[in-house]
Length: 170
Image (cartoon, rainbow, N blue to C red):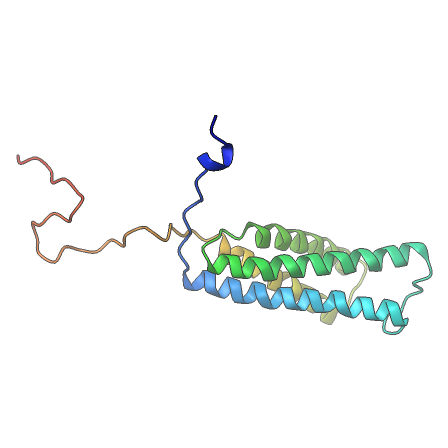
């Protein structure tokens, strides 16, 4: 009985378009920023400086540690997927994590706007959401397989390209 792994085919790599390259660069940069946020929060939590909150309270400590874990995981996904996308992967990890960031950020922005947040803070939040969502939007654009032959007109009219059967004469 053949194994399942032997019967599976590896998917054909997708084309690397300029939009995909831009998405990979933006994903990599956003991943570095998310990882830097996680490291900064670890240092701030360990030293007790930089966080203007009482981290000895259970819920505050839990919120900070959850943010650390999410920031480090998001950074790892964004950076890893940036390299995989350049090799022809779809980039589903970037799309999923960016969707979570954008959805959570939109909820936070609405709450902040309703409770009277200042315009500068709302603008910064909108910029963070846009920076997270842009690579995902670029990766959702259609792109064909890397092995697809580009469509080009014949050099001479009336000559059938190799591998294509000509139509029957009328």
